[in-house]
Length: 313
Ligand code: NAD
Ligand code: SER
Image 1 (tube, rainbow, N blue to C red):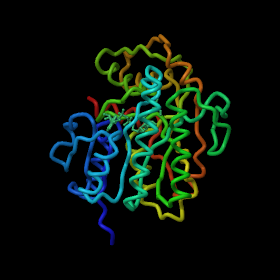
Image 2: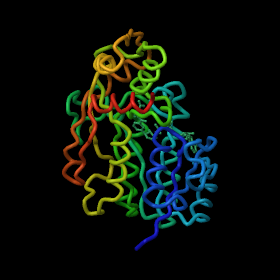
Image 3: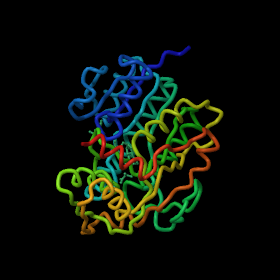
Image 4: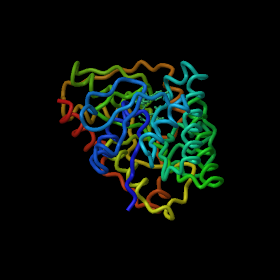
């Protein structure tokens, strides 16, 4: 049996913290090296090795991969949709160069598997709004979406040309309570819980009827690990898989929160993030992921809301 040693890049972010903890539970703390530009997240402290690493520094990354005998890489470092629009050059540079650095090293060092997430942000205003299929018109309008779409094709290229086993999911907006979201358009669905518990009120930066695809973090972590543990011959998509959890609008999540906090109120002050959200599909068709590796979400709006409030209290 191959003894894997995993490097998680961007381990202190919204997904990185929970994914690192789950990988450490499965593979053993010492076999999962967490890395980030930031200081180590307090939740990771004492659970396994941590290195300070800038993924843009290819030489430094290469040294860590060799020194730590890495066999799998999870690349989570990126600039998300809303922050990306404030600095498009930086977002393009980080999101694409980080991936190329990792894929190049994976090719040269015989890394067994690479994980890199894409996003629903690859879709644009010309993609179908409801049940957006795996293969469809893809014309993203954000620099983040463009970088993810380009990244998907680099993954496909390295798989076909160099046999790098790189796997990817197009995550919907992710909802979590353990670590803060990092500058996305879907972050309202996390902020709303913090403000509901602190002030019983939330001012939303989207309109009340802005439906978006969303997923509770435990489902996203499980999907990631199920994809990575699937047999190679089951993986038919080498760009990135659509996956779906739930779909709701700000008004609907507000009404769900009100069932637990009866005095909760909301108002709406849409900003530059509204057109980004409106350019994305409202719901996703993930039938290819269901067929290839048996993907199935566990959480819906009601169960996610009650878990979030229970854990955050
Ligand atoms: P995040 O912003 O919370 O975390 C990213 C982490 O990367 C941060 O801790 C940051 O310090 C680190 N980082 C940034 N630049 C770095 C560098 N040069 N070197 C090393 N580390 C660096 O993001 P997240 O929400 O955890 O997202 C992780 C991945 O999942 C990203 O690729 C993102 O596009 C994708 N994704 C996230 C969501 C979501 O809703 N959170 C949805 C779709 C896709
Ligand atoms: N949650 C992400 C964002 O809003 C989607 O990739 O940017």
